[in-house]
Structures are given as structure tokens and as C-alpha cells.
Image (tube, rainbow over all chains, first blue to last red; front, side, top):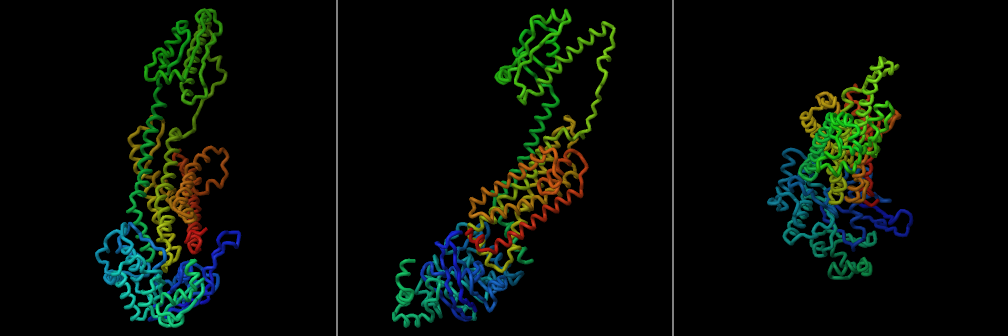
Amino acid sequence: MIEVNNLRKTFSGDKKGKKNRVIALDGLSFTANDGEITGILGPNGAGKTTCLRSLYGLLKADSGYASIDGINVVKNPLLARKELGIFPDKFGLYERLTAYEQIDYFASLHGLQGAAKHQAIETVIRDLEMTELAHRKTAGFSQGQRMKVTLAQALVHQPKNFVLDEPTRGLDVMSTRVLRNYLARFREKGHCILFSSHVMQEVAALCDRVIIVANGKLAAQGTPAELCALAGESHLEEAFVKIIGSDEGVAA
Amino acid sequence: MIQFKALLTKELKEAFRDRRALMMALMMAVMAPVMIFTMSKVMINEIIETPEVYVKINGAEFAPKLIKHLKDENILSFTQVPDDEKVMWDERDVKLTIPKTFNQDMLDGKSIELILNTDYSDKAMISPISRIKDKIRAYAQSIGYKRLLVRGIDVRLLQPIKIIEQNTAMPNSNAMIISMMLGLYLLMAAFMSGLPVAIDSSAGERERNVLEMLLCQPVSTVKIVLAKLTSASLIAVLGVILTLTLTSFAVSFIDLTKIGASFSLDGYTISALLLLLIPICFFASALQLFVAFQSKNFKEAQSMVSMIIFIPAMVPFVTMMMDDRPKWLDWLPVSGQSLIMEDLFKGLPVSWNLLFFTGAVTLTMTIVLVLAMAKKLQSEKVVLALS
């Protein structure tokens, strides 16, 4: 379970003035439950990535807290991260290592070893259908192949909670379906999955609950159907535009 | 422990698969022996042989005996200069003027004035000029002595006091320049070899967005920093060891005893050097990582870290120039080690206490740097290069 409570975060543009201050998060609160896929929707610059970064303790919120399975991220970052699988906003690969070695590296960082580790790596590679890639160096991988490696290294230790920041950008239809099935399978097992996306159909098809963020605040939450009903629209996209107020949608 | 092992294995794998970085480490190691070898060859030639000196002699015909005396000492007339050296000696322009009255004055027992005209500040001419002066003086003296002897006077009367020079410099001191070069090179190797790896694993990883991923994992930043430091320092240590081995191999081909040096890289010297340099390797890599993490991007890191190279290049020179060295220079990293190396090459006994003390100071400073970095990596500013 992932809980975000009244998070506030301000970035000061320059050192002296308060002119360029950006309020990224303005008291955002929500909960993502176990056994559900929760989607975060929001226009660009709404604070989605800032929120997720605070979740893995990369950023320190000015006030409020985030907790993973009841563990406060700020007070106990190492323990909290153990329960997390992270697919970050910006990601890179160690280009001098093979895909297998990278996954192995992250598995070891999560304390896996020996036969258990080997088993876990083989499973994740099979599940993400990347057996052919496994023993190639990652330099020269396509965007989709890079995503797969990153996903594999985030999920190899089978974390209780997944946080994925736009996991489907740049993936082809086949890979998107693989990922979707994969996430659905983990939902069945009772894992908590939180992901941000811009693709409405995907959110509508996959998410049990949707959280709409605008201007660093919670704008609305509920099942896709509830949100449509709330906005009085038949499509999630229309509902989304209506809820965040079309101006911001365009301006951002 | 599983984590640290994984971190270190990954850093080393990356470092060893980075051909460019390894080339850099190797380059320093290969360059040093070649430099030392050629330097020593040149020095030996200069010290042992008395190469030809060509002097523009004005009025040679007035003093044929003097000219012959000079010629015996390889000091020749400019007219005999070979074509390929003509321009050089013309530029050096050493002129000796012998007066027309030389012979007559000699017979009359008058004082004769020879004029030696050249640029005395030219470094290359210092030894030839003193050779010319010595020879002429010796010639004059021998004539003077003969005159006194003919008059039945004991020549020793001219020397009421005689200085007996006893040079206490150890034989090794004569090879000072070579050993100083070697010391400088070893320090440089410690600083240069790990440099590409240090920048790549810090600023480089941040630029490639992999550092952020790593910092989201349940690993303490101290472990991350230690793994990066260990891998960079290991490469640096490797560079130093290679430099030492190749140099001792190269030096074995030169007969340094010819310049009075019993300078040798035996097992004792090598192990003392390694004891000195290994802490330096760690310190240098820590300093480089620290600066690289501080910089905004890869480019800035590269130029900033390159500045650090000035430390090993400058410190030995500065300590050498200083006459009254303050005590704390013995303890500080780099300066302490370079002073001990100086003694080691001079053949003076090494103070092991001092060696271990300065090593301890160096390692302590390294630990402080590691802790500071671990703290820095927890700050969002450094992670996202916002500062």
C-alpha cells in the first residue's frame, strides 16, 4: 500500500529571489491500495514526477509524508525502497553491461543471491519476452528494448509495490500488451501498482482507480466510470480535460 | 555485503570494459620509463664526456701553445666546426680574444689580458665556459709555477691554506634529477590512472541517468561511494605498479654508476614506494570523485578534475624550492609522501614512523571525503545536479 499525505514541495528558481519559485506539489494526498492498479493522470508539469520522486525518497518534501506499507519514506528510506519496484522518469542503462548483468546487478542490490537470484532473473526475462536480448550489451538497444531492461531490473525482486512513471512511452503494441498482462497478473496476486500515464485508453482499460492531479493538488479520484459520471462525459479523455480545466491543459 | 560485492563487481566490469580509461592508465605507465631512460642517457653523456666546444678565437696565431693546450681538452676553434653544428655554435657565440702582444708580454713577465666574451646566463654554456676558464687558468698557473721554481721558490708558499673538500652527499644524490622525475611521475600516475574511471562513474553516470536509478535502490550511499572509490583506486594502484615495474626494468639497462649514482629500484625501495603511494591513490580518487559529483555536468567535471592534476605536479617542486620547510608539510598528503620519496631516492634512511603517519593522515582525509560524498548524495541538489 502506498500512501501520500499532504505533500508539499517548492523549487526555488534562483538562490536569491522568490520570483521564480515553482510550487510543484501543493498538499497532494492519495492512497493506492493493494490488489489494485492505480493510475495517476495529469497534464505536463502537474507534479506527477515530483510526487513519484518523493515516493522513492529522491526528493525531500517540504511538508507532509509518503509511506510504503506504513514505512515512512523520509525516516526510513532504505527499508521503504526494499518494498518498492521503481521505473523512473529518467532512466539510463549501463551500456557496457549486458541486459542479464544489469538485471543481476539490481537483483543483488535487493539482496537476492545464489539459485534464488538466478531463478528470479530467468523468470522476469521470460515474462517480459526478452530472452534473445539477455546476453547482449545494452549499447545500441532500441527505446523499447531499453524500457524492457529497465522494467525487468525494477521488477526482478518481485516487490510488493510497483511505481511506474509512464512505463509505456515508446513501447510497441506487442510490448504494451505484454506489460499490461504482466501488471494484471501482479494485481491478481495482491500487489499494489501505481503508474502515471498519458494514454487514456490504457488508463481506462487497466486502472481500477484513477487519480487526477493538477497544479500539485488532487483534482479528482475514482474509477474511470465514476470520473466520467462526475464530469458528465462518456469518454475518459473528455472527462479529464473538463476536470483539470481546459486552460491548464493547454497552457502546460 | 552482497550489495557491496555487486556494486564493486559492476564498477570494475564497467571500468575494465572501458578501453579508453585503461589506455590512459597504461599510457602513464609506459611514458614514465621511456622518459626516465632518455633523460638518464642524456645526463650521463653530459656528465662523463667532454664534448667539443667551439670558440671563435681571435688572434690564435699569437699563442699557439695555449691553443694546443685547449685543443687537448677538446676546446676547438670555430673554424673547425662541422656544418651541422655550425648554426648552433654561431648563435652561442663564444669569443676569445688573444692580444697581439701575447708572446712579448710573456717574455717580459707582464700580465696578459685575454677576453672571454659570451652570454654567461645561457644554461647550456655554463659547463663549457667553466671548462674554458679552468683550462686557461691551469695553463697560466703551470707557467707561473715554473717561473717560481726556476727562481728556487717552493710553490707551496702560494698556498698558505688549502681546502680539502669532503662531499657528504650520498652517491645517490647525483642522480637527483632522475629520481625527482621518477617521484613526480609516480605521483602523477597515482593521480592520472584512476581519473577517467572516477569521472565516468560519477558525473558520467549522472549524465547517463543511471545514478538516479541507483539512488532509488535500497542501498546506503556510503556503500555506493565506497564501491566507486575502490574501483577507481584499484585502477590507480594498477597504474602505479605498472609504472614502477616498467621503470625498474628500463633503469636496469642504464649504467647509472657512471654518474656516481648507486640509484637502484630494489625490492626494499619498491615496497616503500608502494606503501607511500597506495594511500595517495585512494586520496586522489576520492578527491576526483568529490569534485566530479560537485560539478553540474560531465564537461565541467572533466575540466575541474583536470585541475587536481596540478597538485602532484606542483607540490614536489614547491617543497624542493623551499629552504625552511614547515613541519606540517611532512604530514600532509602528497607533500609528505614526496618528501619521503626524496629521502628514499637520496639513499637516506626512511623514517617509517613518518611514512605511516602521513599515510594515516592521507587515509583519514579520504574517509572524510567519502563521508562528505555519501552525505551529498542524499541531497536532491547533487543527485539531480540542481546546484
